[in-house]
Image (cartoon, rainbow, N blue to C red):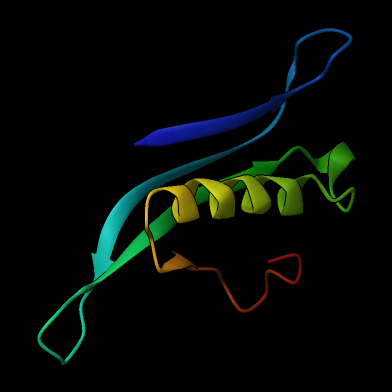
Length: 83
């Protein structure tokens, strides 16, 4: 498991994090597709809607591309409108 975190520059407190790993998406074809799978992404309530979640996703995109991953995948609940 790999972790990205965002900390407050003033007091060092944790603002948010994402937990991800490299995996494969199973396909009906001959080959599985290499993917970066995001297991968790959290931003503390008072920083929600600030774009920090998008920043974490952007960082994961860069990491995925540099490791030849073809997709980023995650699962969310339908009621999670921020996702």
